[in-house]
Length: 224
Image 1 (spheres, rainbow, N blue to C red):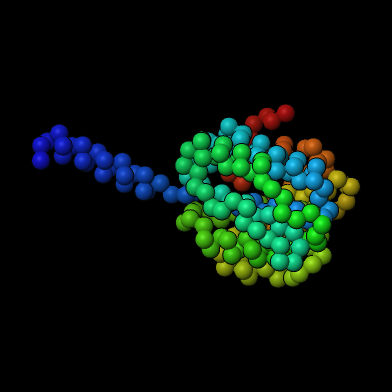
Image 2 (image 1 turned 30 degrees about the horizontal axis):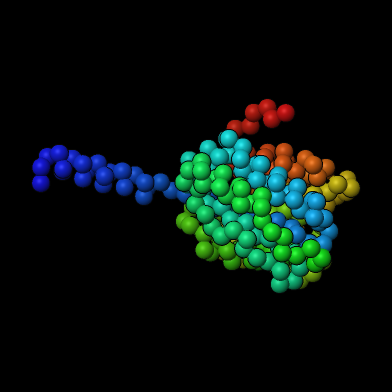
């Protein structure tokens, strides 16, 4: 083997090793409420808001730089949880923008069902067992009401701990109530878990973007 060929082979090996050594920073799942209390208009605003949050340049950079993994679960009542987009590794800006486009166009599977938050958490914990090996595992669950069907969300704590899953929430509360208190006490889980509130559904995209900044540890700048 010539020196030039040997040098080329060594370069290829180094690049391959460097790529393999890049660790996934976060496996981030989005569990979106599609129960009967969510109108079709609000559903589209939610999905468009999630897509817009993912398209934020700093979010794109953080996800791609960290080789992060994303997935989407749609959930509603008893037995109504579906993996709408399975785990995808975000190795480049193109991967993130393609994922966002798919999110924005997801078909709604249910529209007249109850709210089974406990089962949504259970399905999400099960999905985490199939996630790539990452430094952190985070579930981003949205909802606009209390659990009214199936197991209580509090009963899923052991399952969430078993997969080292942090659960954050984006709470849609347009009536100015105390729904976020329920999510803080019964739904969110894990170190540094938090809930944010959407008081006007048209602000969903802005709130989602701020939430992603916090989850991805992006330094906040002026977003107004």
